[in-house]
Amino acid sequence: MTPGRSGGGLPDWSGRRVVVVGEAIVDRYWYGQVERISPEAPVPVVRVGEREIRPGGAANVAANLAALGLGATLVTALGRDEAGRTLARELAGRGVGIAGPDLPDGRPTPVKTRVIARHQQVVRLDEEQVDPVPDAAAEALRDAALAALDGASALIVSDYGKGLLDGRNLPELLRAARASGIPAVVDPKLRNVQHYGGALVITPNLAEATRAAALDPGEPDAAERAGRRLLERLDVEAVLVTLGEKGMLLVRRGAPPVAIPARAREVFDVTGAGDTVAAVLGAALAAGLDLEAGARLANAAAAIAVGRLGTAAVGADELRAVLEEQT
Image: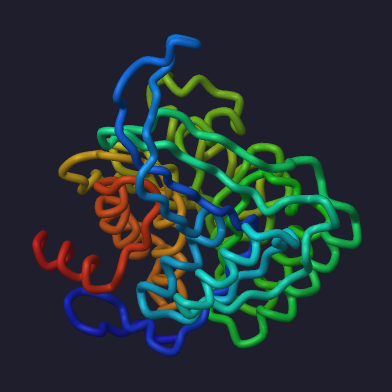
């Protein structure tokens, strides 16, 4: 695969398709005004006006890929409920293909409802089950993901710890991707870290990386030390530690770490920024860029994502504009 450029600093990823495997979430936003404090308890009363639904979790990763102009196949499991049907329609409208089993009867599509007033989140309501799904669902997801890999240019595992991904499907999927020469990016959860062998790169934040490595995040060089320790423990080639307002640190085998300063002018909301990082890094690898170039591109996209309220897909034109501003 020979990397190219489509102009404006973006790689040429036309014709590339990326498979996203993981837990899809419905992100609901209820916007309103705080008019008074409740007489029943010391909490604000929010008069709800506008309501909005956005793809969250693995669905947000897939939506970001589609917004960038890549083909995106989301392999997930949705509940047999209105939330699942609504999310499927929303993704279809964005050009995202969906594969995978239904969630077992009675298990809902995960929904996170955020109540927003005066551009701030007042409360978040989570409706979900996080215990492991039955074997039949875990194995059906694995089989659907393996089938989706045929002809794919990259794989992204978006692990939100909702019981869909674990040792029953992750190891075989990641080994298959490696055997096929498909670069795999994993946005990880601590409880599954031992199952990520075979991935090219994992993308924990500092808290996740240091917990997995049994380190204090306040220690000097904690990000690099955590990355090195994870490389010792896991069969992966690199760890990209996201550091919020401090940017990212890329830790690779046999190479010095690469510090990538943050590009954000203002951090407004970090919700979904990790999804954007995983999506853009996966897109860059699909186009043939190396890890460092892909990480720098993902860092630029994260600067756009954190300047918005809530989960949002970063489009190719927006990313191109940011790159042109900083060249």
